[in-house]
Image 1 (cartoon, protein in one colour):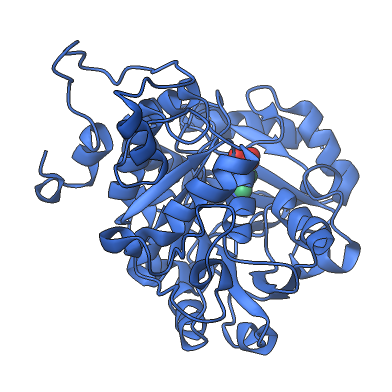
Image 2 (cartoon, rainbow, N blue to C red):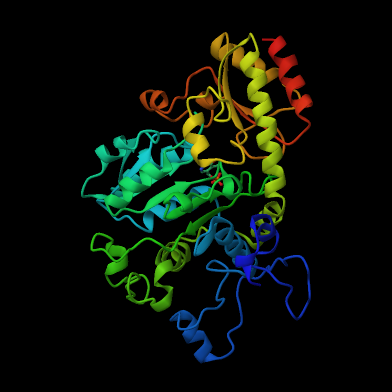
Length: 429
Ligand SMILES: *Cc1c(COP(=O)(O)O)cnc(C)c1O
């Protein structure tokens, strides 16, 4: 299928798959197999030496997963992608696919709680230090880059404060320093934003959220733009013979596959040997989600804007953050990048602080009180006591997580029902 001539919505349904000659199955099949038969000894040896590409073992690749990967690469405008067990493993494997003991990462200070803990507490166990910057002010990135820095990381709409990262500004500073720019675009999805168009080298998603869209599976993906030059001395994992894979020098030994050295190394080294693989069943769930991503995102964005406008006018609400609100501090920056909507996460504070917030959470009926975002159903959470409870106070402040903050992930229900539920709960506060 010549994908080039198809537009986004069509590719969300078709990219990477055509009915196979044997079964003629229209839907993507789930290939539930751990391993694949070699045709003969030469075939087996060629596969291991990547003289020939093909399936070996499902920890490394699987045909259902491969369709998901091709579809995600197509939707993001990337050259290749790799699906993994979770968004968390997608981030961790990306970092260790670049950094060694003694290296540093520069990261946005507005992060998903689990990512913050990984960067702040776990990477230091491997002697990888993370220095934090403000993603809305690219100059603060300049201040934390030094000769040990090997990668720059940001989210698009920061979780949970809802600031928007100045992607072009951050990309320019990263590239001036010859560093790869990694963007976690979970909150925006390729429907709202394709970060590669603004200079991202690597795009990461938690598939668990809007892409899956139904709160049914955990998964992650890493999309390689194929544009970053890894053939620089400071990227030792690419320029020197790799003892963990046939002494291959990934920056130079892959022939025509060299542009996707990052994605290929990630599959052949961290995924193969650390094992955070996606299950074929979950890969299938995310393909199913992608089929309706555009339709759901339209409704998510429309509903979230209506809810943000409603809350803004409510006398018991002290503040609201949603990048789609015209007077939101993130609005002008976000509007430079987002043309179809501003996502479905709305955060706000209720008058009366933390205890009033608790009362509100205990009073909602339609909203589910749980730790997730991006479900088709509306969700509510108090970040300071749950997802971000492990973040030290000074970093909470820098990340804009106030004790009174409530986070909503607005679903695709009838918006009047969502608003009526908030109305009755706010009346009890
Ligand atoms: C959920 C999330 C993650 C982690 O993904 P999992 O699939 O839960 O491991 C990372 N980044 C962002 C922005 C997220 O929302």
